[in-house]
Image (cartoon, helix red, strand yellow):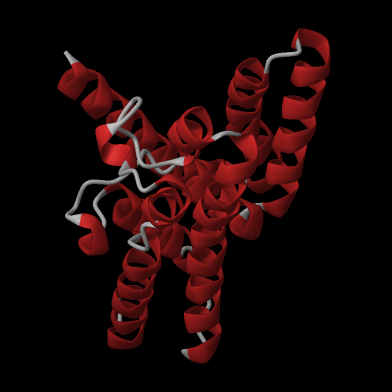
Length: 195
């Protein structure tokens, strides 16, 4: 890796981490109900706990904000790639991964954050638009059949890497697998801390 690429990776990682560290759920919950989502419900400062604690309408800014973290971080990676005139494809992944890390361990919220699902989805919409669109279609189809958003999300989550493998090949799919594995680790950490 040459010096320009290394600098680009570091800049992307720092920007992504700081964007991911913005505690959207805690800000929204604090303004709406003066609660800390890390202390109520499932103690996850993310959309699902915000929805369960505050209601769907009040939690909508959390949904949008957490997804936007991934969007902004992925675009930051692509922007740094263009700024340094690099011929690489991975900086969108680096930005998204760093934002996911920031969301999970936010410097602005005592390193106690969420599971990074929406942040991942926001980044995926940028760096893998076609597979992301197919995953959303699968989610909506599963929801239409099952009438369960949770089932729809699971179907979309599984569909994404399958479509990506077919469309974009193994290297990008493997990079996505790393990011998805981080979400699995976060769920395992949450399960362990609740027992």
